[in-house]
Image (cartoon, rainbow, N blue to C red; front, side, top):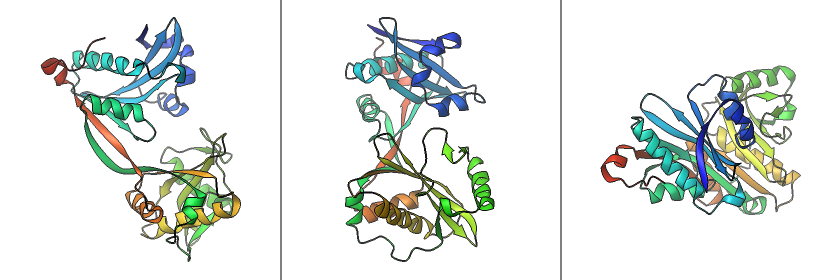
Length: 286
């Protein structure tokens, strides 16, 4: 039988491999994270990370080893935490997630009648073959440049700008993913970088793109950047290559949806009123 417990200190060593580096780094300056380990037969099998403010609690991260999935372990753990935070006097539980990337969390939100709001942020996944069939890519790509083509002073301007957003690049390699600087696209305004569409590649060869920085007020900038990226990838990779794209920019989301002819998987913010635990007892204590 699995169970959860709050973890800290030396106990963190058993669970640290399940926690993303970005959360570990942020926790150095953020005291609001609370870590829970999921244990079965004295083995660490998963982790839940919560973040609190004075009134609300947010599910920041949840993970259980693949071999233990499909048994309701995560649902039971979250049920227990909902009761815990209601008892502590918190008002709402929030979750922010993408249903494509976290289908089990989305199912949990639906099952327990969370109030869901769809955002402009969206996740796309497509092959270069599918992308190449679209006739809507810009044939006149302006003001873009591969990141590898920047001179040193331009790179430093760009690095400083994105580091202000909390994105750190060391020796042109991100802390979490190895980025392909040659394919990454920079939007230029009078030789000054004002946008960055960065590309990474995982161990399976799938490409991962994200618009991480956009200062330019030119409404065509996202269109030119994504069109330049498509042109580069089509020249450098086989058409069966899979590309995932995460957009935090509503306009960029709309551009991609129009070009690809498909709706992106929109990010969801889900909220649960913790007072329902006392009134309806609809979350079981297990």
